Structure formats: structure tokens, C-alpha cells
Length: 316
Image 1 (tube, rainbow, N blue to C red):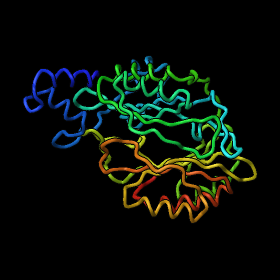
Image 2: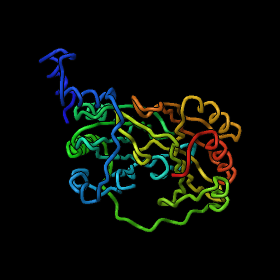
Image 3: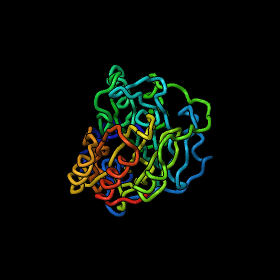
Image 4: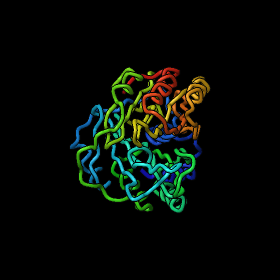
């Protein structure tokens, strides 16, 4: 996978215009400048990803037969925002999502939750392992301890990418996987929340979640990125008692949708946290908006649904 080293070697050996064949095609595809139809991911099985799972140190989930996604919740952090203790499933979930393509290479996209004291080591580790950093941002406003979120991307050999990601993860205090246990009941009016969105949410470890995929095909680096790679609108409700919820998540928007989404959120009193990108050369160009509020769950759902309706998405 060592793309940067390869490209430096090629640059010293010959002018860029003289590159031909596989090396030139690989370099162009990595930088998103390949020609022709973007590569679509190939169908895989759980067994195909077993070497990756072993390198990551945990088993992921295969989505749609194409995306293998492993989660790394920061259960070690006792983080509060505006007096609310944030559950890992709401805002503190690192992940890495892999897909394989017809050229035999894999693409990975993901997000790492890191303490401010870990951020520079993580940045160095990402680059030492040829994982491109594509965002450094916040998901929450006032919170303690200080935490940052950094997105990353790579194209290459799946096992080499997994090995590099694991080395990066080791620069954090992310704990090993915990034994699975039944999800606790969600203390919210989930029927009312579902009605607001006109679709059913899911109980993910006690957090009530919704995911909405873009209607358009999303590509990065000349490769199709399925929704499970992380190019979706994600909304989470954490019960805080009395039918109230703390909400956090991410809206995936094209440029012309951004202002309508912000206006819809603010009309219902939801705070906006961060407007940023996750990818470097996605097409269409997507912007992501994090949000926060604590209020009645159904009322929040109605406001969020109005914001969702301002975008071209459908339930994932």
C-alpha cells in the first residue's frame, strides 16, 4: 500500500508525463483523477474479511455484501456535555469501513475519536501508515474531557491498511471489545419519533438511531462509496429521562442544501456544532453538519425530520 513512497520513487525515476501502464493508472485512481466509470465495490463474504478482522483485533459487520465495518467505541471515556454524560454509542464511536474493488484493492474510510492529548500522536501515526487525514473537527460543543474527531481514508491492500489502522489505534487508549449484551430499553416515545420521521429507528445499545442515505451515487478517488462507508445522515437519541433526549449526529448535504438544513434546525432550537467535509474529493461534494440539543424526544424528532426533508436522502 505504501503509496506515498511509491509515488516519490516514481517521481525521481521519470517525469510524471512519462508514467505509463499500471503505475500511472494506480496513481491517478488514488488521487481521484482516473478516467471512465468509477469502480463499484465487489461482493464479499464474512470469510473474505477474516484476515482484516484478525489484524483489527475485533469482528466487524458486513453490510450489503460490500462494506465491512468495524466499530471501536471509546468506552474508556467518561465524557460530559452541558452536564449530560455522553454514551459511547451516541458520539464516541470510532470506526473503519472497508470495501474491495475489481482492481483487487480496497478503500477504507473512517473516523477516530481521540483525546486532545492523543491527537498529534494519532496524526503522526496516520501519516506514517499512509492513511490520509481528511478532517479534524468536533461533534460536540462544551465537553469534558477535550476530545477531537479525525476522519481518514486510504486505497490499497486491505490487510496492509488494517495493519496501519491498528498501529494508529494503538496510539490511543481505545479499549478492547466488550462482551456483547442485550440492548437496554429505550426510555423514549419511539412510536412518536418514528412517526415524525415516517420510518422506524433502531435500538443500538440503548441509543435510538436513524440513518438516511444520499439519493445520488457518491464517489471518492474514482470509487463508489456505499452508504455504510459513512456518507450518510446519522441521527442519535440518547434518553435522559422523562421522555427527553440528548441528540447528536451528522447531516450529509450538498452545498445548496446547507443553509436550508441550518435554518430548519435553528427554527426548532437545535444547536449547530460544526460544518465541515469528510472527504477530500467526493463527488458530489458533501458537507456534514453536527448538531446538539436536549429536549422532548418527539419535538426534537419533528425538527430533525424537517431538516432531513430539506435534503435528497432516503432511509438507509
